[in-house]
Amino acid sequence: MRSRFSLLPVAAALAVTLPAQAPTAPKPATPATHASTTTAASAAKLPPGVLPAHGIMKTTLALKYQDIKLGTGPLGQEKQMWHVKYKGWRAADGVVFDAWDQHPQPVIGPDGKPVMGPDNKPKMGDPQPLEFPHAVGRMIPGFDLAVDGMHVGGKRRIFIPWALAYGYRAMPDRGPDHPGIPAKSDLVFDVELVSVSDMPAPPPAPAPRPGGMIPGAPGAAPRPGQPPLPSTPGQPAAPGQPSAPATAPSTATPPPATTTPAPQPKPTPPPPSK
Image (cartoon, rainbow, N blue to C red; front, side):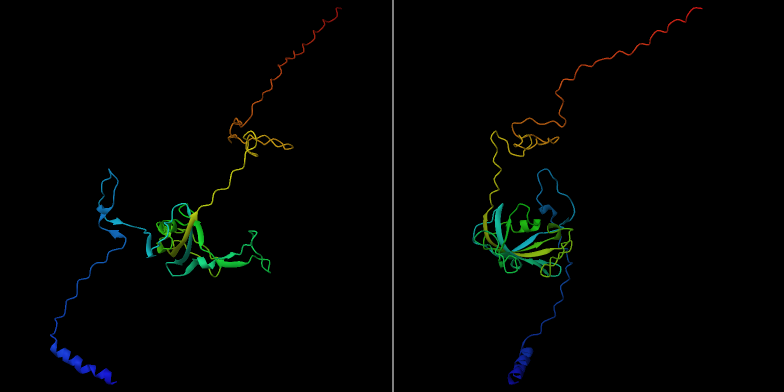
C-alpha cells in the first residue's frame, strides 16, 4: 500500500513543472481503399504493341505465401517427388480439414506385403510425409504454384483463393477428423519440404514377339488355338502392317451371269374345217 501511494507526490510535481501541451487536432481520416484496387495501371507490364488502357486496375484473386523458415537443402524441382508435412485450414472458420499426421501408414513386412493384425486388418504404423509429383497437375493449382521455389528444410504458409483450390466443388466430410470443404472456400496451408527424390521410372513396355508384333495389337497374328482378332474400323495397324479397312472388299471373282430365255407361247392350231 505504501509503494502505491508514494508515487502520487511525484506525479503531482511533474504535473506542475511540465508545461501544458496544446491538444493536437485529429488528423483527417484517409479514405479507405479496397485491397484489390491499384491506381498505378501503367505499372503493369504490357507486351510490345499493346497500348496502356485507362481506368483503375483491379485484382480479383491473389495467391500469397509467407516463408516461415528458409530451407538450406536442395531446391525442389519440377517433375520431382516432393515429401512434405502439411496442415490445412478453412480460411473462413479456421477448421482443420486435413493434416499429414492424420494418415497412419500400413506396416510393410520383409516380403513387401502389409502385416496383418489379429483382426485380419493391416497393422498401421506411424504417419509419413505426403509424397506427390510436383508441377504435373496432381495437386490443386494453388498448392503447386505456391510451394514452387522451396528448398528442403523450408517452411511456408500459403493462402490459396477458392478459384485455385476446389472452385465451385464442395468436398464432402470424410469422417470426424476430416470435415468437408464448402464450395468457393479459401484455404490456408502450412507446408514443410522434408525431402525430394527422382520420379520412379515408368513400367517397361511389353516385349514384341518375333517379327515385331506385340501380342494383342491390331494386325497381330493370332496365337495358336485362338480365332483371329477382329479389325476395328479406323484403328491403325501395328508398325509394318497395312491398315485394315472398315469393310474388306471381296477378292473373289463373281461367276458370269447366265440369262435364261423366257418360254415362248405355243402356236394355236387352226380350227378344223367343216
